[in-house]
Length: 125
View (spheres, rainbow, N blue to C red):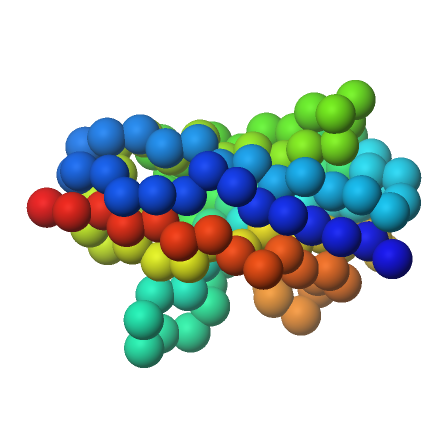
């Protein structure tokens, strides 16, 4: 059973940075593409960023391009999301997800097989 555990959420001021981590266990980590999604109150869950299993390909939502960076450490079985120049509209619960079938950085929620429980991120103005 693959398990994902997010960490690193918190409350920050606008313009600040935050780094989220996702620890994965239960299977060979490099076989999975990893994605980050977020869900703000009253809104649907949306794609944020994704990275391929070998780390060579990434994908970003337009709203975070140039501010957020996704990375992974296949030796440590972790995926990370570095968030810079944060804004109040980044406030949401952030989820990491793992995709086994293709290993490509897909943007669709339905593409992902396993999900973490989420970590809260709040950005004050």
